[in-house]
Length: 366
Image (cartoon, rainbow, N blue to C red; front, side, top):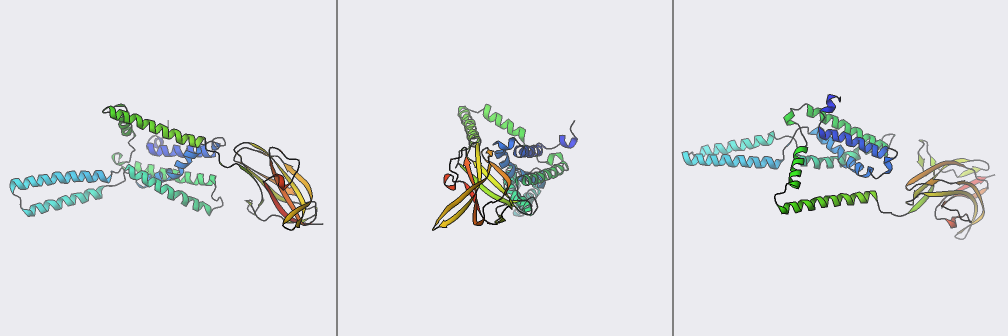
């Protein structure tokens, strides 16, 4: 029931399409993107898949290792040399005929070297890693000069489109080659060799080594999985800050409103970050303070509460809230302070009872 191009798609290129789809789902889906699944998929997607698709498009034909060509050439040359030596011994061939034979052997070696095309599996894997490391930053550099910028969704879409297009080109180029010249990943031979090595050992020593190998692989996979699924808790902290919107509706830490007339308001964006490794019920209290400077100490002469916010944030969650600020006090040195409290609010509301606060100096005229 599938179209012929899908049915005849090479297995490795089909795996590339499936992996791209799985990575996009794991990274962009609302529920799955919060799970550790996107970490291993994202690493393989960035460091290997684009380069493999690009190499597949450049080299659709099967290739042999240079070592196998060299050993085959050495075997051929050795047999031909032995034949020539036997011929010379038996028939007394002169030096001129021996030189002609050497020239013929050299010509055949050069012909075999130039006839070799494609790259072998080891070269494909190495080039795939190297090109992926080069391709992904280049795509990011191109995105940097577009309105979308270097963000998660544009990067995922760009790398996915590049990989899909190069994979399609690779499929078309393979279809245009004769069947015996196309590159294929030898899955069946690998499976047969691995099965024979694991379940049909030559002696008891090989069987013990196979058991140790499987145990080592299981231990390594288990250790990496545990490290991904249960990461160590780092530093625990919360953060509060204020932002404004620029002409492109981007949030920036700049161009704050600092001059007011009494009764006038201005928009500002309040931000809170939770990195406490737990869900926290925050309370943000906006106060205005009339302060004076006594030596090196700032003394609060008067304080008024303007507004409260009570966001509840999960670990690694960010909260942005746009609101209006309208100072009621007048003076040249009015301080607006956003005080952040976790779980409970103390009786005394001030910068001395919390380590997390943001402030803004404004001048308010009557």
